[in-house]
Image (tube, rainbow, N blue to C red; front, top):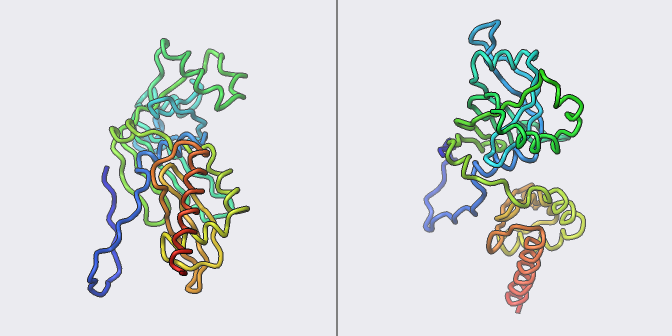
Length: 271
């Protein structure tokens, strides 16, 4: 996997090295997570009518265990006719960003070849697709509908402003969705409603930042992001758990222990 480098502002010489950035999920893992948390994207195929031109279509999808998007499409659809002539395609998927700047939301473009799923694999595709799109039960057995699968060759990921890069197919294939993703919204809402003081304490102890307000904006198996209101303005930081977690219960246990240790350090420093 390669990422685009970003230019840094000119700084005075330092006598000590910059602290290491807290580890975060890889771009490949973020894309796998994004694909499992959304269900509709834009499928771009190569137009038969206008040779060489991309043809975009709204496309519901589901993802198999290898991260390959599965589509249920009609033989009458223009994108199906395009794929039958040339299987090269891309699927664009974006994170919902209601009330926010859409350019700050995560999105990914998966490029590869979309081909009809062999008859032996249709039952499995059906079991994957139906729970994600239950209304498809009304047309899934129509003879003019078929399952197609996008075999991913490469991915381009944008995680927001200044966060972007290519993901190779082997890295995407090996990655897994973040285990906290299904519970992330509830965890964030709970922390922001009931534990603002704890987050202010963690920001002070782990990042040395004095904040008057704090809000959790993202959480994953390795840690979480906080948005802080300080005397110097709004700041964003990442704080990691002592080790990776796999369930909301493990995350809660890690946070309770981090707050306990933070209170101990603050009490000790005040003596």
